[in-house]
Image (cartoon, rainbow, N blue to C red; front, side, top):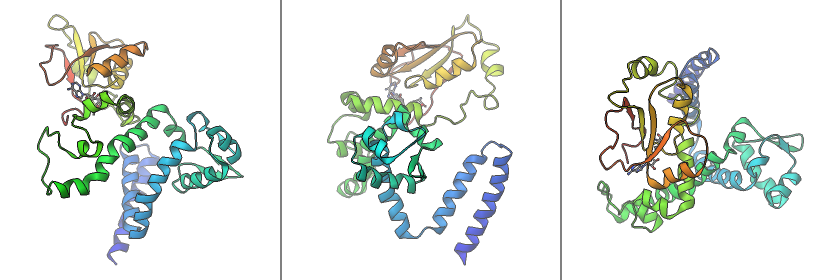
Length: 302
Ligand SMILES: C[S@@+](CC[C@H](N)C(=O)[O-])C[C@H]1O[C@@H](n2cnc3c(N)ncnc32)[C@H](O)[C@@H]1O
């Protein structure tokens, strides 16, 4: 009885959010996703939950990484052509890709696999690297939680401790960021993940979000500091790059700061940049004083 009344209220929510989505209202897409997830949670039985979380997501990961080499993910392909391209036995490939179809990542009809908007997006290098980071670097810690906390008698790890679940899972004494530098492939995957983890969402400097022109750009006084914006711990500069591109007529320098290996990678890429890149450890005093604005985006937890 309770389940069905909550199902009907979720369905009402879906209908209302669906109407807002049709009118392109901000937040309606996210609301629809949330309602859909709550609908699944209200309907799913434990055995289905286990299949979906433990089984299907693992398979999607393996299949997503192995079955479709990135350049082949748009358009459609017959299994034999995919098999040849991916170097995966055709029978194995068909078995693996069926899981991707079950997860709605790709579709199968007329004797061929068809890419979707989602699978084409996930085929981009940044997302491929992000999947690798989440599974290869982050997931072992989560998998190890039960044993780790049992071993440490369910005590919360102390701040800055080098004996946490991460170190335990990866058999290292290094802090996370130093471990990344010591395992360069993970560093590359992490940096890609940083540029992808909220891509496609609204930025604080987008129109209608924060009044950048009124509060940051107008009134900028270059005599106190010629720096408009410092992005502290800004990764490879995805935020500052988009900020600079949106506000081309602004005055003042834009500076990206991050750790040495990240900045070295930015400089080595040789790509044209609308910002400067500077090595700075944010645990040391900020060398740029009096800038118009400092952005500290998703770094305070570090
Ligand atoms: C979670 S990411 C956030 C990246 C970016 N600000 C964003 O919101 O997408 C944290 C960033 O802080 C950087 N970082 C970590 N420790 C740092 C330190 N001691 N000094 C400077 N940057 C650091 C990392 O290299 C990474 O780019």
